[in-house]
Image (tube, rainbow, N blue to C red; front, side, top):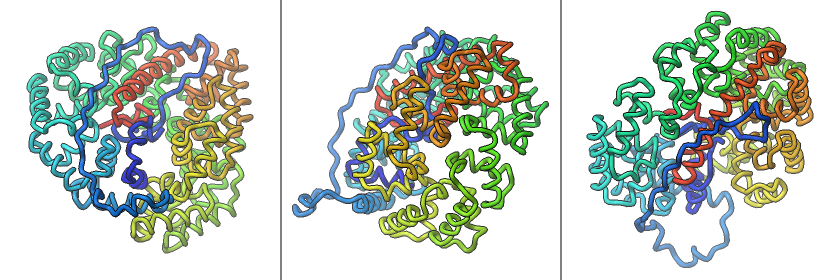
Length: 615
């Protein structure tokens, strides 16, 4: 909700539309939403981490011919136009007022934060428009499409062009596509939402031909293929000629049911471009050996696709060995590998000590402590039981919680509220409460749903600009970094700059790319760079590869660190690291193709990990 509030600030929408990803996801954005982890970034790496030579084509951007929207405040007194620049509090108050006006005019979207936020982000001119005018336009679009207003708003949020032309034209276009594909209007709408570039294609038969070819490669009926592309837009980026395996091949090689294979492909379509010889991991075998449920392993593979090239016994050894080391179950290790694998750059003694501290302060189980540490790896350093207890008590006071148990439950649910000074949380609650005119319960809901944006309310533009100058990053990049990792507010800009420079030197990339890696893997900022460098040296010696190659593993396939902890000799002897790297390069290549296409089309899909790109 706090991020939605920012979009409702007049003038903020344009910047939102041009920015790359929320999360770096943005998921987790995942796709039209989540979020989730950023696309892998390619540092200069050895040949074992090569990218495939195939190069798909890129669709042309859509034309634009925007109408003129009526500004709701057009009759404001001239004195208001001449007043000084607003403070952050003034802007949020104005944004809250605009947001309330939109919710009043569009009650269907009041509980649909993702849709309303996407609508305003994709069509920034609407922020200053009369909400009643916006409703009229959406009602006309809904009537032309034969759907409800919410469904029409979803389309407008994903395909801004639909509001630039007469509603009847949009209705005719969608109906023609549905008829050509033999589907209903809803499936056609989902297809357009998944791939906004299709809106610029005038002949539905062109889309049909491509989908027919894709269906043949996948071994699916056309209707099922249309639904699959509607769920996962990245499928459209991979040319059918690049597809190496069918869904049945994936199911057979990876020990999956047909539905599980379809789910995995939906989450990470680049799997289809992986040669059959590289699909070595059997999910069924790992589940039988370790007891880790198949859904947890699918989550792991969707976030670290390279592991499909890993023989099952090696992953089993890693899961069971790390579980014994950390005092948790193998399924909790799988969650660690999926969510925060670069945590393993730290020494095991440091991780174990942090888990004990969290267990005591939060009065929770070892598994819960590990989940908290994965969510906020900065809690691994310079954190004592007394400090955490004090911050938990402050949470109870700030949000009016009934007792310490409720405060500890809040801290376990949203650990980000523990990583900044209590004064920052109190200031944010005060500012948001004043802007929204809401209760403590409303502030708490915002803090739990988006703690980074919630606490960013307290930051002045001058501070962002100062950090921007010190880090030599764009202000938008700094704001995104601090919003997604509020723990960095506890560091100085100089300290963060030094860490980014050290990581940039290790990975052989510019500081801007190092910042992108930190967005995807927060533990890289939490773990001191010298520990990460030491870990890279250890990997280099264990596998007898260059330090650059070891750094490439940490940057691209950090989940492999867990395997190297207990099976480095086997990995070295089998040469499996090269296979994992080859699969990772395929994932990275098509991910970057998708991001470039999104940028060219200026589409509002704000994503960071295609494992989370679901409908």
